[in-house]
Structures are given as C-alpha cells and as structure tokens.
Length: 342
Image 1 (tube, rainbow, N blue to C red):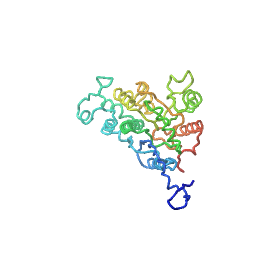
Image 2 (tube, one colour):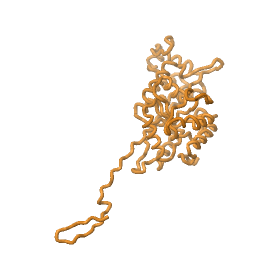
Image 3 (cartoon, helix red, strand yellow):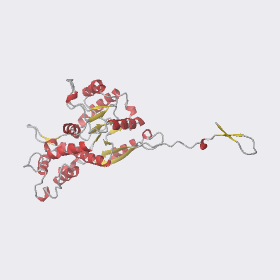
Image 4 (cartoon, rainbow, N blue to C red):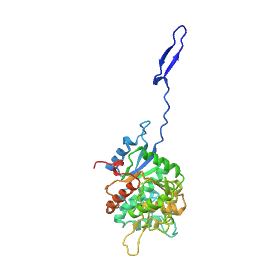
C-alpha cells in the first residue's frame, strides 16, 4: 500500500506505507491461572518448577507464563508420632479449634466437643491417633490438604495440586481450565484431574459423561449410577482440584465436630484408620449441600507414570493402567504430557 502526499510546488509522489507507520494493536495479556502446589520439596518440587516453565505453557501472544505457581509445604508424617507434633499440626490445619498449649498441655479440657459433649477432642485425637503406624501418612496428607485449602481459598487460587502430577503440555491446558472455571465457577468442588478403577472409568466415559454438556459433568455419586454397576467410590484422587469457601467451611466444620469423620476402626481392627482426603472432600461437600461437585470432561492433570506414591505404593501399577485408559478415552497419549526422561 502507498500513501499519496501533495506538497506545495512539487510533484505528487508515492511513499511506501511501512509497518512503523501503523500503531501496533494492543495485546491483552491473559490472566494466569493461580496454582498452589503441595510439596515437601526436593526433586519433586524441582520437577514441578521445570514443568510449569515449559515453553508450551507460555502465552503465544506475549510469551508470558500461563500459570502463576506457588508452593505450600506438606506435613511430614513422622511429626505426628509425638504428642506435641500431632497437636501442633492438628491446630495448624484447623482440626483443633483451640491452641493445645492453652488447653491440652495446660491440663485443661477444651471447649471443642462436637457431637459428644463429654468428649475432649484433643484428648480423643491423641488417644486414637498415637497408634496409627502406616496410617500416619494418610493423616499427614489430610492435614496438608486442609492447610492448602485454607490458603487457596484465602489467596484466590484456581487449583490445588499435589507434586506428583503432570500437565497436558500445551496451551490447550490453559484454555480447558479457563472454560471449566467459568462454567463451574459457582460449584463447591471442581476437579481438573481424577482417576478411578478401570471399570469405573469405562462407565464414566461410555455412559456418565455423554449425558451432560461437553465440558463438565457432576462428580458421580450413587444417584448418578442409574442402576449401573459402579465399584466402590466412583472416582478418586485429590491431586488437581479446587474448593469454594462454602465447601471448605463445610468440610472443616464436619471434621471439627466428628472425629469419626477423620478416623475409624472396625470391630476386628487393632488400630484406627484415617479417611483419605480424596473421599472426604466430595462426600462432605455433597452431604452438606455446599455447592455442586463437578469434574472436567478432559482432564488437564494426570498422575505421573510410575512415580511412587507416598501412601499407596501397592496401587502404583494400577494407577498407571487407569491413566493409560483415561488418556486414550480423551484422545491423548503419554507423549502429550510434560514428562521427564527418567
């Protein structure tokens, strides 16, 4: 294109229109998704940092990161072996509503009674929790998630992650999450990644998800089974999710009132067992009516292949098989995820 200039006393000339002659169109930067990662540090944290620094997770228009990542410390299970450690972590995560230094360790009964007026919650927690053995890891996980939920709600985060996940290594991950957040924004719990037994995943993709909109669907509870066979808890995993303030408050209130919602023991069991956080979150939110529990159709986060679980190592191989099925169901392959060579 050319611009025609007419100058007094001169000939008309044609001047080329250069790019510098046209003001650049303003590029609106995207709002990064705020990510909170639970980690104990070390190589797992380092890998998460490298993952979110992937060139494929930058805004194509501006080159800026699509994800704003922060880290929050997990709870070390060995800290729960001692009475001071157990009480300190229980208070820090919100299970205890009163500082144990002013009640439990001061020889005073606390006011936290819950469902049993004659029970002192702190005393009962230690009595049942001191013999947990391997279940301490499950309790440490629960406490770490309670801390992360509080931080995420107060800090306006979009998703809570565990440090054993891998992301869809593409700008599509950002687009899927933004769409899901917008459509399920008023829900109590949003899952950006999940797993389950292979039979349940086949049912999910063949029957449950097709009944709903193409982007999101309700977390399947018993009322969604329609008489179809679903084994145990339909889905599990708390490695990529977010809770609303209402849902967080409802979950915490239930655990503060009912220690049986934290740990239980059957008649033939010698020690108590902890209820896993991935079962607590959807159930307690659903039961309290604290908003819908929603799952994204196409997960963005997947459990890292063959990365040893800190709690359920005996299930690692099955986790990998379930993830393989899930990837194929949504049209992805392992190569589409951010993976390390090792």
